[in-house]
Image 1 (cartoon, helix red, strand yellow):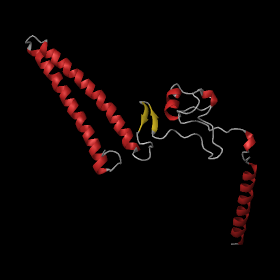
Image 2 (spheres, rainbow, N blue to C red; image 1 turned 45 degrees about the vertical axis):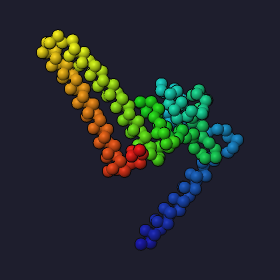
Image 3 (cartoon, rainbow, N blue to C red; image 1 turned 60 degrees about the horizontal axis):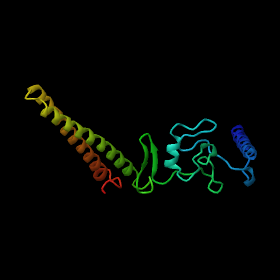
Image 4 (tube, rainbow, N blue to C red; image 1 turned 90 degrees about the vertical axis):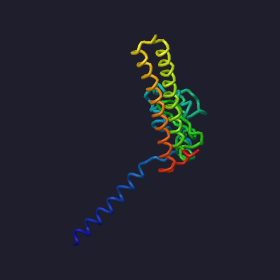
Length: 191
């Protein structure tokens, strides 16, 4: 029992001496030491590597008020008062689709709804455009079929396919909004 007590006491002393030694070795920043920089910014720029190809578009989205030159490293400069790098502009997120804004000014309140609504608008616009083009093409095939039954059936299939695709897209948007608003109660979907 004495040996166990001595071992615990010894390990406690070594732990405190070691931790004080490690913390005594760290250098605290002084105001005269110059600016400090973060390792990477939110756009993926990690010096000394070159900025990614999409950095300028991401910088315009997330950091609209800084110098657009990546060599200035303004997106990495740590604020000495808050000890944090620059935050992204409120309500903005840069994705592979480009700059997405929620319109609420923040991704915290109503953020998921804003992003999903933006994506649904993009998807519905593309699907609606494609369905419209297929409707026009199907109508043209029917009009130019010259009473050829195969061409008329092909044109009908194009028109029916476009209408069915549009209905499926509308229903999927309705289901996503219904689940998000009624079941999950995500703020921003009921608007």
